[in-house]
Image (cartoon, rainbow, N blue to C red):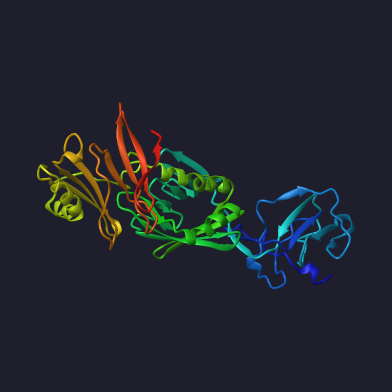
Length: 410
């Protein structure tokens, strides 16, 4: 009994602090007495034991309980009970004055930080034709703001951090890189390194890396509360994070991102596509001649045929060594009514040119820069219909490009 009456001496006598703690056990319910004060619990240091702020006081008609998990203390006219939900803790009353309520104390040691008074109440979902975003802002002040977003755009998935002005002890006026550790329910869920991007004031970007970020997204969707540890150079600050609504908002981004990216067009994602168009160059003509050597030889062998040649060629280069050429060849009666046709020629890295059947009046061709590693880029073929452009998505099936789907006009 003496050991049980030694514990809670610091909370009510100290000013409220940001750093607090919780765990699944032990949990203590104190009834019929003034507020007990957390202190040492077995091997737990006093500085790591504080009350859970969102549980508070609750009416308690009868706090008494039988068994070793109940301790009754105080005088007969002001007796109270401490009921241990689990584990072992030591309790001592501040005085013998009776109170008509109970209070539950979580005596765990998992650290977290209380959300700032200006923080958002929950995660929000922001949707637009070219953007889906799940966002949480742990701080909004008159001279600064901090918000973390998980974003899907037609080009990519990524984490974005809006870090503007003065945010508590952090000043983001001249910061180029920010490190962010994310803890969920006390455990490290993931970390992000975010860099400033030209032309995007106060916004820092960390490209989504699936093998690292799947675990982070899962933790944010399942957790109860989190902590952002923000480091910018020599500056550091922690911010509490509520995870209400995180599963809904993050889940919506993940669920809809595939369609947003699959149905992207040069209208919604201009940086993602390369138009195979432009000025004919000697280098492109020479490359086309090399690729079309057998076909031009066949056309030249036709009896009474004019001398066909590559008349113009436009080349587009895609990252990782991909090359595409749009070549105009003619004249020859085998090339349609106009005696001219355009050949579409592609060259994967470290491979020979691949030539596709000529078209007399082909549409404009866009090359999709976004593709799986090692796969052939998708193509968008365009046709005009009255006052709008119709996009068709084509994919490589191993031998040729085939029609996949028409992208609905927005």
